[in-house]
Amino acid sequence: MNIIIKDLKVKTIIGVKDFERKKKQTIHIDLEINFNLNKDFSDNIQETIDYDIIVEKVKSFTENTKFYTIEKLCFEIINTLFQFYQSIQKVKVKIRKNFYFKAFDRIYIEETKSRTT
Image 1 (cartoon, rainbow, N blue to C red):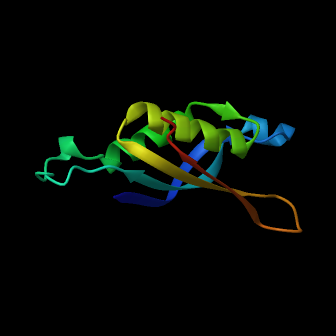
Image 2 (image 1 turned 90 degrees about the horizontal axis):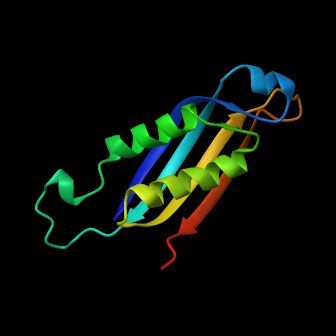
Image 3 (image 1 turned 90 degrees about the vertical axis):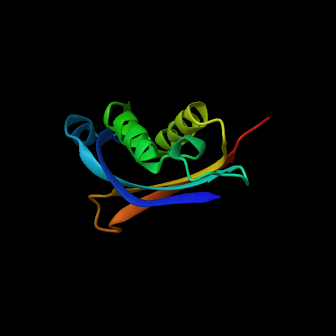
């Protein structure tokens, strides 16, 4: 089973430039979460992954941390989700950050990680 969350907007301190360290900027996060769901699932939210909780966890974590690189933020979001839900088997995180350079508008970083046993 997969949960796909697109374009979660979060304000955080991220970047290496001085101006990026002074003011929160909006980043956009896409998540794809693969998890095991029991075939006898009874339609009870306690037996699955609550995507509202996922959104709140990722948003809270990101808003309350400061990273220099979006690569590190990707890794830490994945680790946070693996720690919170044991049923998650694989996570793909894509983070988009707007840039202030004329050569391009934004950059994406994407990381996929499977749970190690």
